[in-house]
Length: 463
Ligand code: NAD
Image (cartoon, rainbow, N blue to C red; front, side):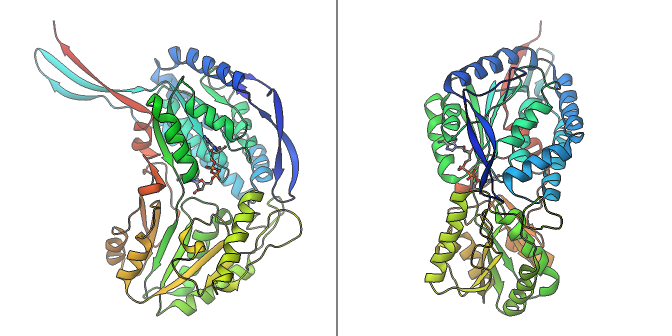
């Protein structure tokens, strides 16, 4: 771990499993409660100097980007081994981290002048909260950590980052790489089980929690933060619908829809999780997608040419199997896949499901894995209603040659991001967040930076 600028071992360790083999390949430190108190003391001490010098913070983010860029290959190897994604995708994730550091370094921390007269000046400044607790999931452990680290630090906070116990190593490696770049105590990276996340959420030194993970845990974090009135940002699960109108060319959109659903083995919060297709093109589109699914190379992410790795962990793998079995019981048809593949690791065949409708778990719940239900519709109004009939509201997309009409339709979806003729286009300069149970608050761009500041009105009588 990196605590107060130093390498620190845990009081004990826990095993990290490579999902491609199902075997423990490394030990990670298990941060004790007493150690966590020490982390918070270090983060508190570091605040005093750090919050004062904005120019230095901005330069530090640029330096973080450079330091990470120099170690892309090394950190990507670790990421593939603990997460499962193909090495090229792991490299993309690390490079994404570099881009996010650079883009965040360019954001302004504005001072708004409300009134400027001969006698009085009223201005509004953005101030850091203090210590931020950052808790991250296992699907994009490195990038989602950097989404929090970069804006939190630019705003003048110090931060304690706790990654998922399934994927702690890339975040710990990041802490190690940045140990000489960021002043001691400003960026602390620790690891442990879910209990450590609960300790961070309720720790009295923490003033803001930035959490990415499941809805169920997000609610627990919210409850833990409430007695202390900690501020929270929650980036939670999704059950994104994509609505495909009858005027598209099935062959042309099929690859985009396929990868919008199966990127990272379907383990993306804002992946396509339900596909609604105009019945006029339903059969040809399913067939085009099936061709892609049959050709995809599934395997160990360290092997050349692999496009889809395993599901990240045993509980998630079992959940995908369970949802698929439930769909089978409800009479669903499996155009491709429908079962695990290989006898070691957590590999599952890319699975396209038809003959299924709303009301079955695979449609109603977040599957977070490589199994996609594809459902026909006759009237687009019905598709919109079905897309919105959920507690989730992360993102959604509409596909059509009529861009104006698609844009109108996407604006009717109850979700934080609406895409037209694409899915999963996430950028450092646009806000990302969810409606309803998909979250509270936003990350990225000036909105994401604002989430790590609070306002101070300074009202001055001159002379
Ligand atoms: P999870 O909720 O199980 O775990 C997330 C993190 O919370 C982990 O670090 C975990 O150790 C920690 N944690 C567990 N119990 C805790 C507690 N009681 N208090 C505090 N922390 C606790 O989620 P996961 O399975 O790691 O991730 C998958 C979920 O994350 C999916 O639902 C996915 O959609 C969501 N997700 C959302 C976004 C987004 O930006 N909206 C991005 C990626 C993933």
